[in-house]
Image (cartoon, rainbow, N blue to C red):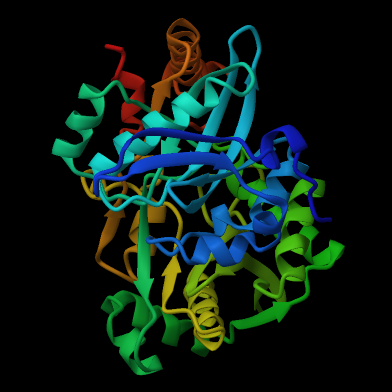
Length: 397
C-alpha cells in the first residue's frame, strides 16, 4: 500500500533560496526528487536529529490512508516530511515534521525560507513547523518576536524516552523501583506477552481495546485505517504488534514501530474495569502493562534500538497535577524513566497574514469548545481541559 505522492507537491525541481542560515550560507528549499523519495527513510535517518518514525515513509503512507497529502521537501539539504491540509475558505496549511535544525536561530530562518517557498506553490496560507528542539522560554519568546506563534499539531509536546543502551540489567536498573516490582509481579501472576502478526483479527483485538480506552476522550482513526497503519509498518520489517494475556484473556496490547535506532510506542489500549467507562483501567493487580513494556523494550533492543519513545505524557510542569487528564498515563510512563522530554512545540508562520490568522483563531475556538467542562458534561463526555495545551491561551497574534 505504498502511497503515490501528488506530483505537484513532491516532484517538481524548482528551488528557492531564502535568508542565510545560522552558519552563514543561504537556506535552499525545493521539492524532493523521485529518487530522493524512493530512499526517504535513509535520508531522514541521516538528519542531524536522526529523525523519527513520524517522518518515515510508512507513517507517510499511513497518513495518506487517512486523507492527508504528503509534501516531500529538501530544506537546507535535509529531508523534511510535510503534509498539506486544506482549510475551507482559508486556503491550506503545510504542516512540517521538522525541519531537523539544531537551534532556534536555524528554525526561524528555515521557517521563513519554507514560507517564502510555499507562497509560490498553491494557495498555502501558513506553514507550521514542529522540530525536535527542547522547550526553552527564551527560544519561545524569540520565535514570537519573529512572527511564529504557538499552535497545536498532531504530535505530543512532551514524552518519556527510555534509554535502552547497555545490558538488559543496565536498562532494568534505571527503572523506578515500582516498575521493577511490577514486572516481577506480572511474572508471578502468569502474564504472557505474545509478539503476534498484524492480521486483521489481531488488529481488531487491539483496536477494540484502544477504542474502549479512548471512550471519546481523544480521537482515533477508524478500524480500517488503524489496521492498514499497523500492517504497513509491519510490512517494512520495522513494526510489531504485542498482546498480553492474563489467565488466557487478552488484557492489554500495543503496536511499536522503529526508524533508525529509535522505537516508538505507536498505539495501545487495555481492557476497562467497567464497560463503557474509559476512565478506569481493568488490569487490576496483574501488572500486565509493565510486562508488556518490558517485552517491547527487549524486542526493540533485539532490533538494535538504543531509545524507546513512550510518545506522550504530561509536561514536566504538570506531571504532578492529579487533575491532569493524562495523570495516570504520566505516572505509568515515568516509572521507566524519570526524565520527561519537553519539546518546543509547533509554531506557525504566516504566508497570507489574514488567512493564517483566521485558521489559527478558528482552531482555537474549536478546541476551546471541545475541551469545555460544561459542554462536555452536557455531552456526557469524560474530557477535562489539558493544562499543557498552552496554545489555547496565546491569542495576541
